Length: 82
Image (cartoon, rainbow, N blue to C red; front, side):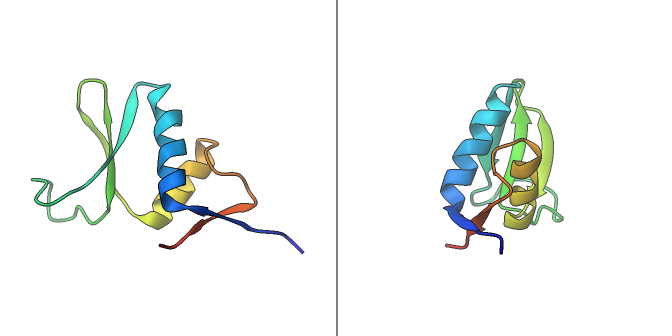
């Protein structure tokens, strides 16, 4: 039996932000009218040190996958839906 430890979405965002900042990138939350294309369906996006859009349409599901890839979320941790 595998134990799963719930982690809040806010904690995962903080962890991932710190991991990305080490590489000169920042995780941002989309708020209001973003001026992004209509296919911008995610809650988050990533920019680099020149404020260039590097990745967009990051949903909560994709956030979890990205956090695992960057080492911000361990195998036994899952995002708790808020």
